[in-house]
Length: 448
Image 1 (cartoon, rainbow, N blue to C red):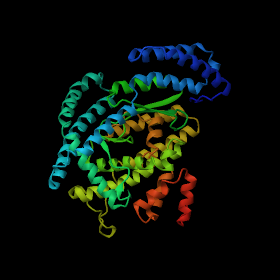
Image 2 (cartoon, helix red, strand yellow):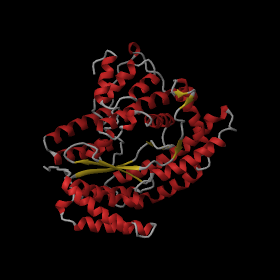
Image 3 (spheres, rainbow, N blue to C red):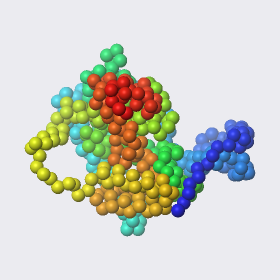
Image 4 (cartoon, rainbow, N blue to C red):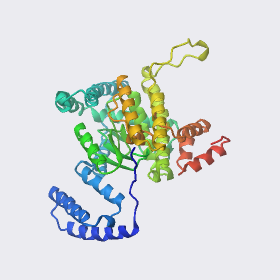
């Protein structure tokens, strides 16, 4: 068994560290600009920190610094992305690339774009499966032709992308307007997104419990072999579990959405990320990073709104893609239970892991997760790593299969009790804690 002890902050040590960093920053201001300055900065601060006696540096600060030293060359710049994205969207507002597209042609253009993007997604899936297969000796060489084909297809998609984006923005805006989510008659904030490669996310959790201890966004073009290396390097620093995971969307402005998915998923995700933009103007969004609970509240609200708005957009603009209604219970024929239910299996895995970790059986929990990962793989679910960091990330979406948090059912119940989607969103946007959510449910006459 292994025991985890994440560092504890020390006030006196913090003062010593702050003084040392003051001299480090003063020195760094004199270094040359550009790439060379970045390298020299890292080397100088590393020298100062490693030269101090160990008890003068708070261990958690040392750990975080060491992580950022590893991730520094690969970190994602949100400000650079938003500057480019806002400039592009401002220009498209003046000259909408979809203005000349007849209404009857708009759905066809989106379908064609998404179909081509899904071909790219299929190739990426093959790459993931190769890396997940431990029998492949050299996954880099095995995936080289696939990566070349992906690069070629992405270049072909570049010209069609702005038109498809503009059409989808208008479609989601139309549904939000119908739902009453407007300010002075206009959807606010405006729906703006880009089909782009969202950043990867490095998740770090203690090994002894499932908790999002630290996260770092990484560049979207970071290759998979570098993911593996970073995870290994981070885990060697302390008693932690690490995972680099892709995200389907990113709540910047304009938001980022991947295009290598089904159209219903894309519509849901555009609306999901718009919800984060909406919440950024309200208390719930302001307190996103306060705790694991506030992260879960934000993400689950966005999932509920995104799924509902996305489903309505699909029904209105792409009705042939709407799944058939379920057969009424009286007409159902007895059916055999599915051979493998991913949601149930993942939830059972999470509960078993929590129980093992609660007893201090860390190594046993990790061996169990690896055995379960192989089982998921045998049923076609290419999970590259299943560890504490995986659940720390996926558990923040309380409607996802890996979640066991009661926040999800509470928010779903509140939506059922709300007269409209707009009323639900405006209500939850004001809360900042689970206690306030419980009080809101009680006000509706429901037990929290």
